[in-house]
Image (cartoon, rainbow, N blue to C red; front, side):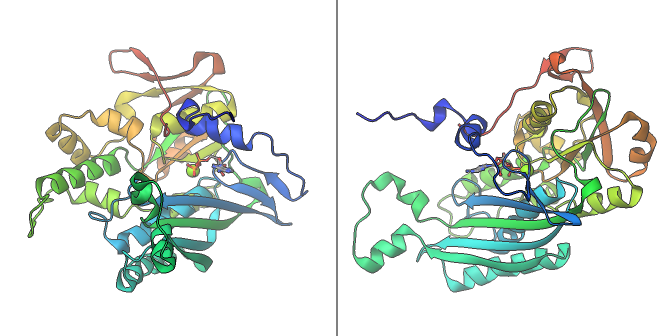
Length: 359
Ligand code: ADP
Ligand code: MG
């Protein structure tokens, strides 16, 4: 019998390492392959950056509560976030979709209106893509049956793949791996809001299940909803960094939550970290929603994900310069690898951070 290993035995990060660890770059222009936010390609005077992301209905988004225009916008934000995380400027994207007969042309037009809005906002061009019919549509067309009923939900859903291309001056690139002991750990915006927005959407969906004319209650929670449905990619911050002449020693986009993403920096940079709980930026609405749901806003910030903010490190000597940038908070500092990554609570206690990622 052939061996079968379950994905859960690895988990997301170990699985990626396992599958990609044996690849060695053969082309001399490949500067960095898998392992950072984007691949780095030597394009002569500058580096070219390339990233790809996949979004699946039922896993990454729920079409019953996610307007398609917002979804198109968010797909672009997800794609270019990885370019920004290398301190690069996004230039082009390609968008590929897997569709089934369940979705209409009008819905796809909505989706592309969101893509257009994001392309205009971030000065990025749509440069191509691919369109495939999913298994269900193909089965219907060819009159064949799909074996295995319980997987149909995922194979008939909307699948979105975004590739993004960007550029960065060679001396301005930020990898995950450059953090040095004593560097300051910085965060843009605030954390946990997207996650609380998701909880709010789910609560309203549960409350109105089976109701033909639902009027969900979102009053007073516009901010966290926007953070979930229409996140902003921090192109503004990357431009500000360029203008201020600050090159982060390391950077990552916050996609999986502060704990997980900081641990990625620690792993790549072979360093530890100390971050201070009371310095983690959390919006008032996030606190209020968490209280209403009996959840901990700090847990939302650490493990929630989806914030699309940037986490970066800079040398201690740049403290004043960074403090002058609007909307950037210094939440801690880089330590030696042996100390691990710890969250310091107001009473001085240490909590070791743990990675999330899918199982
Ligand atoms: P992000 O959350 O920033 O998109 P991931 O954690 O998904 O990054 O991926 C980490 C690194 O692993 C990236 O460099 C990515 O390109 C690479 N990677 C992820 N999945 C695959 C795959 N299936 N094949 C090759 N490389 C992959
Ligand atoms: Mg990333």
